[in-house]
Image 1 (cartoon, helix red, strand yellow):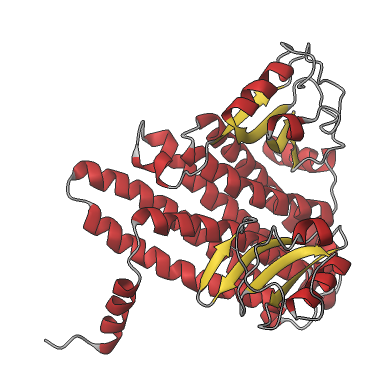
Image 2: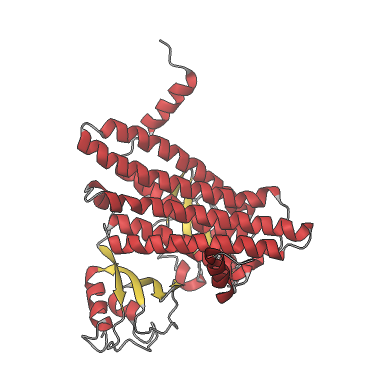
Length: 207
Length: 207
């Protein structure tokens, strides 16, 4: 029997990226934590780029929830396994629901051009959020976040890095930046501008 | 017409605690961010006390969502207002959905006595989470978090403080501890133990 194309694609995708249940659940946890932050930030700063990131993450979450169900069913060989896996799937479903709610929130930005009450309603600090990509000419390429002294020199916190189709959630100091990385940063306006200069190759160091 | 008792209680409660839409939404945002952290922590550390906190927060969120709907309707005097308020209610609803999902997660702890796969599935660090109340004999009473050097001396982060029926979300260094405060702390086992001694009045300072 010929496998229909869409089915083949699905299986290929799962084979291409074999992950353990542990890894899947860990990424779902990370996404659900990040996506809530990003959704509020998108609303507060009226930032459509961040809203777009929320939608990407939501799509990824759907895919992970689908994969973890398959993996859980394949892993359950007896009643005890199945009980454990039912627990895993309950957590996975909650993580997915959280990400759907976050995606619902940012829909506001898509179908209203302005809704002035929102950005100022719960914003307090002078912090801002931005997506910045690492230019291939930037001195930051190949350096770690610690080496670059991003936190101490700019006050900017990197919430996540998108690297092609992958995200690094809450990157630690030892993460090495690569050209093309997209950093989702939160911090004071001035600090963000300063970091942007480094990542665009306009300055060599932050100090 | 006599107001039924349950109705009276509701109105009294709202009058007792008059809050602006801004304040309500801000607290809903804070709860939805905290509750996701707490729900995962409750699962990872198999901690029923934290699960209980998740349920408290979920009940509070329901109440806030009810109040914000009333406030939004009272605030909307024309079509433009109503449009803004529809946006506010959409965010509020998403925040409520997030907290419901978090509460769903911790239900696992209530109806299963053990499900060994879960706590170890996504736990990585040697951090732990705990609820610690401030004893009236503790030297910490009346001192700020900064003065006590909690972070530098113990490595413990205070996620939230419950003070009677109120929560302080992500307390800053200038927050002064009071007797009876319940601190929800995350950090290394040793640090938590050390902090516990201070809060129970067994030691005078952390150093």
